[in-house]
Amino acid sequence: MTVREVFPNVDANALLAGAQFMDAYRVVASANALTARQATERMLMGPRWIGALMRLRNIIVAPLGLKTSGEQGPSPGGLIGMFPVVSETPERVVAGFNDVHLDFRVVVDVAPIEGGRQVTATTLVLTHNPFGRTYLALVLPFHRRIVRSMLRQVAAGCGVVRRDCG
Image 1 (tube, rainbow, N blue to C red):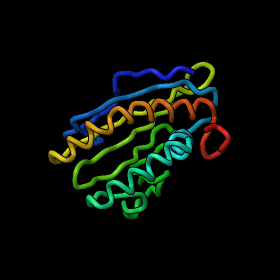
Image 2: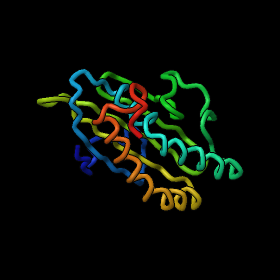
Image 3: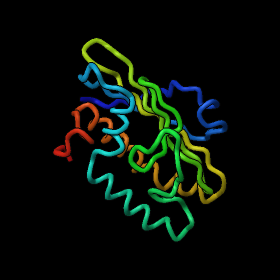
């Protein structure tokens, strides 16, 4: 299962107007009935090591006044992992939140292809200040590895459904 970086194919202005950073990665999953919510759950709630990194991130950023897991407030679409769902259809989930240093969205698109589903994860970021730009620069190397790992979990059928994948 190969995860490929692809050109982001989303309307950035509609999802996060003014976004300064955007990337996208894609994988093919053999699950013919996979919805965007299921793919997002597998991505955001799957690998244990990513959960450990998020807990470490929360410990580090809490004294800086940044939002941590559970501090995003109520979301009409609920939460997937620590991320509020902004909008949802069977083919697309948009999750993310706004913070003092930056706003971000993760968009998970699922499209049928022969033999399964094509799952694309697009990340958009809008920074607000020098701290946001520094934060983004520091997390980008991790972000790229994490997104690829999350998509491999989707293709392998790991995550909420199976906890034996990582």
